Image (cartoon, rainbow, N blue to C red; front, side, top):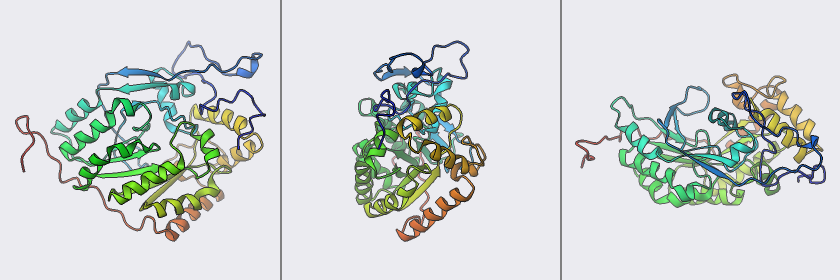
Length: 357
């Protein structure tokens, strides 16, 4: 559990505890070292939504080790506030900080459904699975009001283009009706991200996410509805949740998950100092041990960009994690088979209307 006495300025409602400098901005005002000013507490910030009319929505994924070819993200930034999130760095492209800004200034791509529809109408599009939440969670809290993700799923159903979803939010069950229709044509899979079963850890690691119990309920409901479902036990943070893997995979299997994956945490770009600051405030008693174990998994660094290695790490500890994952998956019947999503049902408009047959 977090040692709140160690630093009274720890904001339990946020992951990041400060805003580091945006490397793309020459002049900006930031609060990097709050402890340097007597009694200056972190300002309580309400979440701000920035509405953006984007030009494109589907991105080709060039990384060969992430398991997806295309992604579409209706939101940039994520109110869930997961401290380790690799998407934090992308917030700097929008002119914001990867720290508190990432989880409190959310860019809403309100024209995403129209852009997706336009994308599918392009005759050069070869049907392929598109991953929602390839960067930030498509079911973060603002989705309850905006319903952009739901509209995008409706368009995937309309054109019968396969789609994958990864989320930490139980809101995905709201769209069970559309998911079931997609599944009739083998067009959908849904993964829940479950890093642990320890709620005390979740509250500081992923402060604004659904409880782990709720996420397992998502897996259970989707499985009972016949939706292909699995979990990502990710990221594994040595010294914090690596020894939770057995219980997570066991619970996921019992809930009906058929597949599972994992990654080892890596702290590229601005995420490094953000995570380091959080770690020493949240877990001062083991901060150095955790930091060193992360480094051991990435050849003495925490910022690993090597294809393949960056996802699962290397070295003795990373190999131990990999061995445990394979052992537990075999034990609990996970990853026994994989059914690829259907790319042959895709259809385009004809004279402004969908074909009848």
